[in-house]
Image: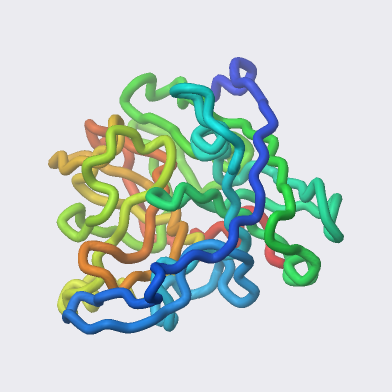
Length: 293
């Protein structure tokens, strides 16, 4: 059954960010879950060899973000922040275009959001990455905030998702919204990000520190861009545990060594009443839906 959406009611707005410089603590060191100090590459910048479709685990890195990381450094006006607008209004699957620098005119796609550092990640082909530089401006045609699945009214909320991408996903609309995912993960494994009052930006992390859980839920096979289901998780007003609820998200950044952290999940669908029914689809990755590079 075809999805019934309120696309004609949605506003399209331009939002802009600049490619942000990689950041580290002044010492470079982080303390891992075993109490050991080490230095790793981390958030920000242009990642040349970590993109959607790449493993989300196994890198000698901490919270590394795929593709290009952008933020808006413009000044806030009281409560109003241009970077807040970028982070909320940009949706996974939105088209992006480079508007300054050597790669001006090149096109990419939004693939995720990262809370804390407040970055939006954009995917570009490898040949475009070689032309980009820190500070280049990228404009996103934001579209998706306010998107509704009319058949399910308030039983399923949509967020952070381009309407065109939603219609490409492996979904079946019936009594439940059935959707293909690569992994089903229990809410008990979720960590950093809990306590946020909104899931309309940022992400929350899958903790990967327990060997039994890693084996049981195949967490070592997670890839950036995977669609995953978080079972007993409600993201309607921030991420909480709620028995029977289901949240669908996209793996937006790679693993972390820091306690409570791990691969990040940006929410795209959530049902507090369990109206979402995930099923196994090993191919459910953004690479499939937005095109291979």
